[in-house]
Length: 96
Image (cartoon, rainbow, N blue to C red; front, side, top):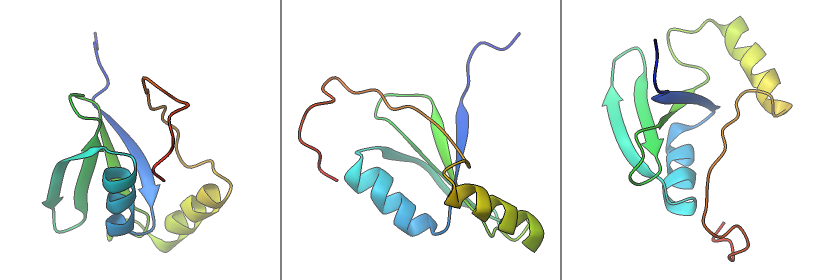
């Protein structure tokens, strides 16, 4: 029986831009940044959390063009991922 979820995936067009947004704007921290040759395994997480978010490049080398295009279409509709962040004060001024 499973007892936790350790990773979620978010498709991104540019991992460096996504990294800047999630770390410098939202305050998440890098949990892994590894070159796997077929892809860059880039994950972020909330400080103190064990749940990692994989920032996966849409056009990764292991994905065919048709699949990448379908993911792009989903992304353009906002349907490629979903996760919920928790905060102690949702009315605090945003830094975004």
